[in-house]
Image 1 (cartoon, rainbow, N blue to C red):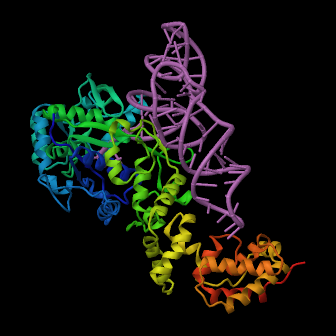
Image 2: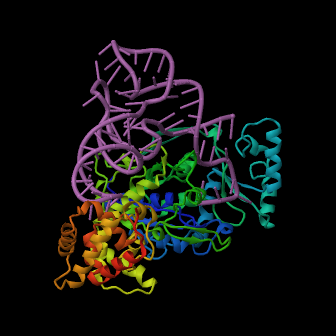
Length: 512
RNA sequence: GGUCGGUUCGUCUAGGGGUUAGGACGUAUCCCUUUCACGGAUAAAACACGGGUUCGAUUCCCGUACCGACUACCA
């Protein structure tokens, strides 16, 4: 049992990759790395009607952004290609035929109208769940009910048909899910699912079994929405005679809406103003836009860390994990069973942690970038200084500039509430004196020298510094809150500071 | 409706036959401080319900309730 672990992420290119899909990819990736196995990506594009241009690239880009790219994929194929099901189309029919020969599948010629009629008939007869199964198939047009000659004729004449699996009337199907334990289902509740569609493409059910087998997949880690069809898949492995190499299943808990109930969806994103997709996406058909975590300012490591903890935990009290540490700590046994509500606050918190862990220079690069967009150029040293005092109060890199604009731009107006409360005669006296000292000062303008001069200005006038600090801040920045003032002063420089104080002195009227 | 799955603080969760049921986010208060934030401390806050098994159940079993997924020639 020491064969190489091979897992796959098998998304459908029908739009932007949902965050739930990203988490599934992540868990597959972590498991592969943890076990020294391989992580493959297979594009499940058997539904040609749902193909969306760009969706495939989106999947690739999203995984690349997070640094969890696959070992084998359409872009870097291994020995089990092709990695797009549409390109594997010629391979599937022989497997369907194999099942027909073994008596586990059959041709069906029913039109969609006939299927609809059947469902209506059953509904009218108060059958609870109308389905194509061991009972109803006897009344439908298929190779089980039609004379052999007629079946041959229909096939020869090119009449459209599907191939359905023949589910036994009574059989207990069981599977041992790595997360949920034994799950048992009676075959009478299963229906004769279509295996081959009339367009010659396989359905998911056939394709995923054939491909997983051919690609030597050892573990299928996928969303819980697949649990109900897992028994069918088990049956198919059995019918193909692949029981010995059947992968182990692990069905992941769902990602739920933050409020109320149900699966997390794009609607929730729009409603609450947070992203549910890794990156921005514009649907080429509808033009509909979806926002991404990346563009919102989430750092890939933070996003990954957040994502990993949506349904999994290491069992101890650690919260911050690099990708390497996640690999080391990961195990499928520690994935929870119950659905996970999405909490954007936690994502923000993770982002803040990772942001603060970054060096001033790294952060300065973001800041300089934002400034450049506004046509402002700044040297890295100054940018780093700003980043240094701003990063403790930022959630996203963009906050550095958004919250720190006053470092570059002198205030043109002043916070009314602060002005009316804190701007007074004493402040005017101290600030006037401070301005004089600044103009006369010729040494290095450090936070320390900035402070000692201010202290002197206050002391010489017999005024307590604490009483006028808010007014000083207001004069220099226009607002009543912000990072350490003396650090701000040394960054903006004494000339600029003196200018700002002068402007404030002229503009603000003295209260009282 | 049927099948399957799930249920510990508001949220993510740890735990597991006997615990003061632990941590994190968020919230509140306090400390630090020139403000805000960071940081530190503290607090409020949970085993869905009913039966059983047991000396003892939040933990095991069975029901009920609630929630969810699935129920296509979609994946």
